[in-house]
Amino acid sequence: ARMRQVSNMPLIYSSVCRGTTVLAEYAAFSGNFSSVAKDFLDKAGKNEGKFTYSVDGHTFNFLTRAGLTYLVVADEAYGRAIPSAFLDKMGSEFTAKYADKAETAKEFSLSGSFGKQLKQMMEHATQFPEEYSKVANVQRKVDEVKGIMTDNIDKMLARGEKLELLSERTDNLVFEADRFVRTGKTLRRQMWWQNCKMKLVIAAVVLLLAVVVFLMVCFGGTKCFK
Image (cartoon, rainbow, N blue to C red; front, top):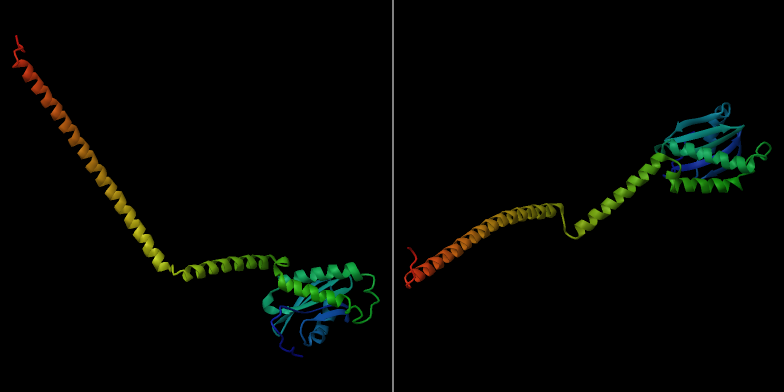
């Protein structure tokens, strides 16, 4: 039987079974998941371990352990890692609380208690997939970085500082810096030449004064040469 189309909720249905007897279940949306699952329960219950079947864009993920079969139905696009980790957690939670009742419990007799817990676990796995999968954790971090970058770009554009303007301003700064360096070198050369000319003028004045003093002494009656 073909399943009815449901929402894009990644985890859709989960149950705990003893053989083909459903002890507890929870469905996030209406659908014939339970009846479709019974077609696979007999196969899944014959061997210990995990099994996955794809049906109409959904994955039926099974875990058989200690005579019980745990099932979670997920959107096929959701991958296998999170449903697999969810099965492990569901098995541990059920065994810790209902291991003594599982062998004798009647069909659906534990849906009222463990069914509520299945609902909470499915919602938690949907809201916090990074706790169930390293890939989902990396994806969450990537999404956070993308969000921060997008926000920064939006703020920059809101201030009118587009990339073209920033590039133009950078080119202007480089040009001004180069011109400043060239102007500084020219100014240093001019100052050095002015300093040299000043020293030459002072030296000439000192020499001239020395000659004047010498001539005044010599022509003032003092014999400068014998």
